[in-house]
Length: 580
Image 1: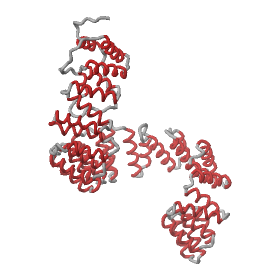
Image 2: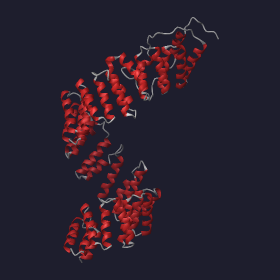
Image 3: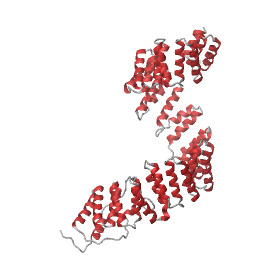
Image 4: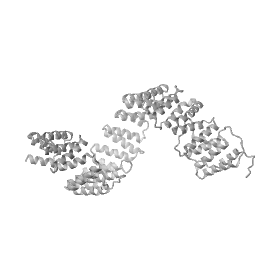
């Protein structure tokens, strides 16, 4: 096939490119260009030196292949076609197009090759240099990137600081933090008066664990550019981790010099909040709210701090303000209003607000609190009805709902019903540790001793380090006064796993009592009672004291515990046995 030679290949490219479709959106995991460039410049027309050659059939084929591939959504094929054509024609415009297509189709190696070729063919292009540098750094090719960085900096020395700031996030991803630090030190060394260079070295030093160097470089950055908030905040952050008062003082001083910097004030407020300086934090949020009175988020922040400080009236005022202004999720505000009213012990108001939580991240917790408040009011049926409508998002929540239902029934003295709920739940989650333990304990409560022991031993196999499993079986044997030596081995195993657990210490004391070791028993039981003045522990301790002849001591332990726990059956039983 013959082609008219009076048309150059470039005229034909221009004619066809005018008809070609260009992607309107770029979805890419590749980096943005380093420095001061814009990706859209890849498709802008420049005036580079162009080669002079005539159109050939292979050239036209490659162009049409690339163009049709783009129209048919085959960007990988299009990029390869344009890259092959660029290598053949040595035309920088074609190389630019190949680079754009490879970049947009996320072909890292091909994009690097295309940008290298574009830079070679159009050495004056700043974008070619910057994009090649960004690609090499994002790929972890630090050594290969050195010449590219030098070229970018020499081409635009006035923007060296911007270049340093833009490249650091790219290299920060590399796992070798020491190598990154060495690279940044060498890269910034020729620019000792550029504050941004010192800040990026400080960031790299902190990541590499070189805290002293990070402090020194941060101070240098602040000294070179005292009005730069990024450097000031970074220096303050370093102190906040080790000397919080010093960090807060630096932020306060910088904010005093730049009172209109709203972002900095917000950062300072959050830093104060993190250090639990609630009143000072609220003052800063209040200043922000004064400048932006329609912000529901700021009103809500002030409310939460006031709530933390126990100033419930002010907290409620700001939360109601956030509700009126909208913007802040209403369900979130209602959840915290409910929490506030619970703290006030106004359960009716709390319940009303929990019922207004209809969606969002707090809906599950709101339903559980609603269940708890209804149960507290003695409305077991209504509480279980609400619980039955709670939607669980995962197995962990499904198990939790079953356990809560069983607990409601158990606290309502419906022990058989509680056991049945747990047994049915165990069929669905046969290896869940919490379900096994609670079902076993419910079986023990109903004197299903064989079933109880089977479940506990299964739990021991599944979780050999579960101290409560060993304690449960050991104490059950002790309580029934059977297989005492075996029971003591089980309790001792539990004690080895959890030596500070009051219930397990109590089991040790009771086991020593049944074994005739009264002094050891008293020691364990006093430790347990000090850690947790539970009425059942008081019953055990009093019995041991009585047996040792300290009847007055026993009476005091029992009567003191009975005042706090007048309805405890174990305590009443032991007192009736020893004090008719």
